[in-house]
Image (cartoon, rainbow, N blue to C red; front, side, top):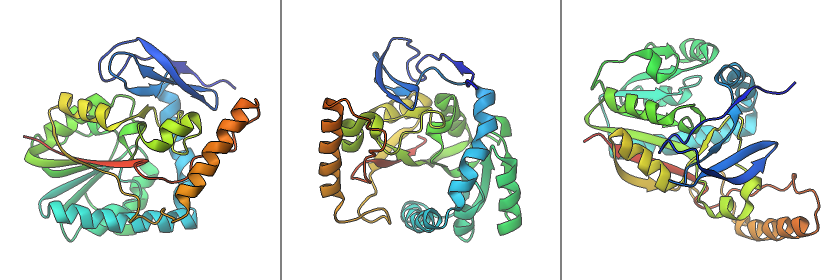
Length: 285
C-alpha cells in the first residue's frame, strides 16, 4: 500500500526551488536552492505521520542496549543543563515516557508534552509527573513568558512545521529564558557529507527535516531567539569507540567502491562519528 504524500515548500524561506540531496529507502531528500535547508519532499501526509509515530518508536525506545545508552545520555545532558541553568519552570517538548523529566524534578518545576497519549499515561504512572499534556506544542496553549527553560530533545526534525513550533516556544519562554534543541542529527557533519544517503541518522519518513548548524541558526533567528552555542557531544557519550575513525575510513572506501561497481550499498551505514549529532542553546532576548 502506497503512503499518501504531500509536496511542501521550504519551511525556512518558503521557496519551492530544490535540488535532490539523495534518495533514502524510496524517499527523496531535497536541498533548498535558496537557503540550503534539507528536507523530505514529498513527505508523508500529516495524518499518516501522526498515526505511525507511536508504532514506529515504542519498541526501539525499550530495547535494552539502546535504553542503557539513552539513560547514560540523559545523565550527561542533565549535568550540562544544570551547569547553565537551575531553578524555575522546565518544559520538555516530546517528553516521551517522562524519564528525562524525572531526573530534573528536584532542580526545576517540570512540565512535559507529547503527541502520544500512551507515552503521557506511562509518564504519569511511572514517575507520578503532574504537569503533562497530550498534543503538539501549538495545541497545548501555555501562558506567554511562562517557562525558564524549554527543551526539544530529538523533536524538531520530526515536526511538520518547525518554524511555527519555534515561534510558539519563543512565546512561552520568559525573556532571558533558554531554549535547548538537543539530540539533533547534523546534515553538515563529516559522516553525512561522506555517506550521503547511507548516513546512519537519516529516517526520511519520520525525521522530515535534516538541519545543519547554519539552517538551524537561521530558523532560530527567524523565530526570535539568539543562539548562544552549538555543541557536538561524541567522545564523552556511550556511543564513542576508539576504533570508529578506522571504521569510518574503511566503510567510506567500501561504499565508494561498491557504488563504482554498481553494487547494492543499502547495508552500509556510517558509524557514530564526530559532529554527527548536535545540541543548540539559545536565549530569548
